[in-house]
View (cartoon, rainbow, N blue to C red):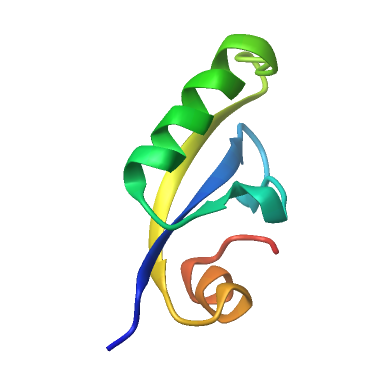
Length: 71
């Protein structure tokens, strides 16, 4: 059985969504949401992009590719 993990991605107005960095992958959705809240408070330029959380299983690079997310 594959373990479900959660990644924070950047979704720009123009262009494909992208994994923000390797430190944006979490074992629990709660951890991802806590990190996302901190990022939105301090680092987000809301007129250019927004952040989201995606759930995935298996290899990170393969999962991002299947979801159309730039790795």
